Length: 290
Image 1 (cartoon, rainbow, N blue to C red):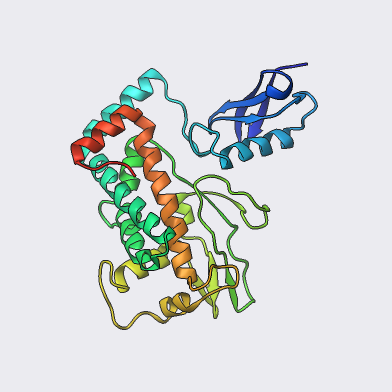
Image 2: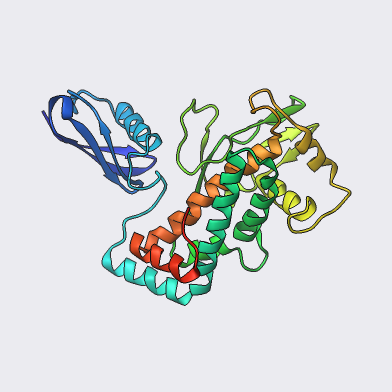
């Protein structure tokens, strides 16, 4: 029985090792998208199809049995790491601010998950600073400095035409979620994702960029406008049966994008720093990771 296979996961060769025997057998995965392991009692690696192995990889990610989220985090060679660390020193201000913004965003997401739904406005403000600031989008600048690509898993763009209301609820994720491909359609580069149409109400299209900026700039986080745009009022009033009671689709959308933002910040910081270096950075800033 072979104990090694190579499979393709989203365009990247990934090596699969079978470790152990019988009831204690485990599949180990190593490749561009990270390291993962999955318990597979009495498994025959030869008998499994590539599709079975890919599904086991995603199952491992959802169960938290992986070194990092299944997102492009290319392993660094010695020279690459030195170059990345040099980029961190050159762009120290961005990385210090990224750690602060991550802490705030993680707190706001945690508060929303505990039922304080008004924190969707604070999440929008942090995402604005991280992704949409005209001159210094902190997350984009830091990721660019270390040549780290930011990926979002989300649904395919909304189809054209009717119905009057079409919406994708849990629409942003750092790693591939469970569920049918018809809902979680594909992965996107963040710069492409923010401009896809994630929903439509009354013939009006909504993109992540629109929702974040209108919420931050008109709903009171960065600026308050008593005359909210009709589109923002429509989104705030939209409550689908699939959402928990009392939660608008605007709040749910920002909550999930905020969760993605926390993971993205962590990935960029962890891409070039060890856990000890991250802890030292947080100590210098006087803040601890939650």
